[in-house]
Image (cartoon, rainbow over all chains, first blue to last red; front, top):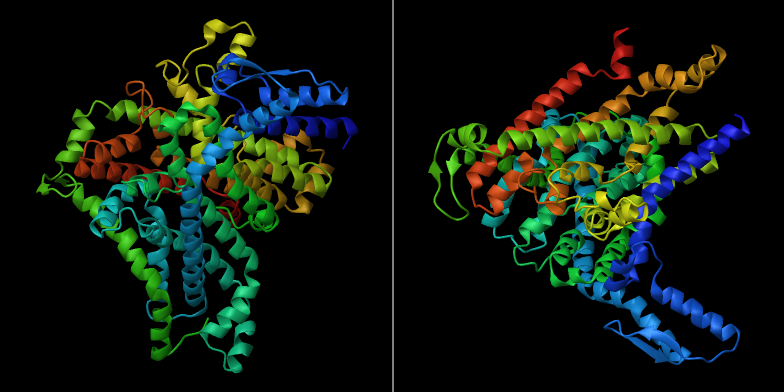
Length: 314
Length: 300
C-alpha cells in the first residue's frame, strides 16, 4: 500500500475517532466550568485553568500583583496570588465534590448488584452449560431448549408483568429486585456461549480424569474452568456492561429511590435540583464512567480477543 | 457425550435446578402473565376485570398514538439499521486494511473506549450539552453566523425526531466495529490472494468479496438493531418523554406510560404482546430470507 493511501486512512480514522470523542471531551471540559461560563460561551476552556496559568505566569516573573477573581456570585474580587490559587482550586473541585457526594451510595449499589449478578450468571451459566454440553440424559435436550428459547422473548414483553411479579413478591426497593431477574435472564446468554465452547472440548480430556475418579466438581474446577478463561471474560464483561447500563429496571423497581444504581441515579440526579448546576451534572457523568474505565483498562485485551475470535454471528 | 445412569441423572438435574427455578419464576411466569393480564383491566393492587380482547381493540382502533408512534418506531429503526450497517463497517474495513497489527489494535481500542460512559449519561449529555439552548450545536451555528437556525432541537416539533435520530453521531459503535472486524479477519487469505491476482482491489473488492463474505455479521447487526429499535424506548424517555406532543412517541414508551403513569396495567401488557408479535414475525422473516454466507455455501 502506498504511503499516501496509508496516511489518508490514518487521517480518516483519527477524524472519525475525534468526532466520536468530541462530546466526551466537552463533557470533561464542562466539569470545571460554572453555569455563567457555560452561558457566556460554550467553546472555551475553564476560567479556573486560565487563572491558574496566569498566576503561574506571574510567579515565573516574580510578580506579586493582586489577581482579579470572581466570587461565588460572579462579582469581581482582588486577591493575592496565593489566595487566588485557592479560589481557582475550589472552582475546579466544586462540581466533582458535589457529584461524588450524591453518587457514592449509587456507586456502591451498582457494584453490589453488578458483582453479585456477574457471579451468579457465570456460576449458574457455566455449570448448567457444562452439564448440558457433556451429558446426554433424559430431558437434557429439552432443558437446553427451555433455556435458549427465552431469547425470543424481548424485554418489552416482560417489563410490565415482571414489575407486577417483583411487586407481589415484596421485592420492590431491594437489591434482589435487580439481582434475581438479572441472573435469570443473564444466565441464558452465558449458557448459549459456554455451551458451544464446552461442546468443542475433546472428550479425552474428561475421560482420563474420570478414570482417576474425578467427580463433577473436580472436572469442572480442574478442566472446564482453566480452559474457558477467555470465554468467561467475554461473558462476565458483557454481563457487567449490561447490568451497569440497565437504567429502566432499577428506575421502575426503586419506587422510593433507596436502592438507585449509577444509571437510574444519574437520571434521578438530572431531574433533581442538582441539575441546576451544570458542573455537578457533567462531573456526575464523568465519575459514572470511571468504574467501567478501570474495567476497560484491565479487560480490553481478552475481550477484544474473545470478540474477534468470531463467537458473534447469526 | 456421556449417558449417565439414573442416579447421576438426578445429580445432573440438581446442578441445573437453581437456574431452572430462576428461569421459570422470572422469565416464563412474566411471559405467561403478559398474555393473561393483557385480557384484563386493572390497576396495581386493585381488582382485575376480564375484558377479553378489548385492550387490543382499543389500542389498534381508538388510541390516537397508535399509528403515529408505529411510524416513528419504523423511521427510527430503519435509520438505525442504515447507520449501523454503514458507519462501523467502513471504520472496520479501514482498520482492517492497515498493515501493522499495532495500529489495528490501537484503533479497535479507541473506538471501543466510549462504551465506558453509561448509556443514560450519553443521552443526558446530548440533551443537556449538545442540544441545549446554549449548547454546542446552537453555539456552533451562532459562531458560523447562522443564529436563525438555532432552536430547541428536542422541543421543536419539526426537528425532534431527527434530533433523536442523530444522537450518537457519527454512529461508530465499538461493538459493531469489533463484530465486522472479526468477519473481515475470517476471510481466508486464499480468497484475498485470488482477488488480488484477478485485479479485484479497493472499493470493488469491498463490494464484491468482503460484503458477501461477512453477510452473517451484517445479518446479526440487522437482527439486533431491528429488535432493539422495535422495543427500545429508554433513550426517548430520557431525551423527550415522547414529546413534543406525540412527535417522538413509540409504542414501547406508550406502554411504559400506560403502566407506570396511567396505572393501566392490562392495556400496557396488550401493547407489549403486540410488540412481541411484531418482533417475532420480523425475526422469522429476517432468519428466513436474509441468508448468511454459511447457508449459501451449505446449499451450493
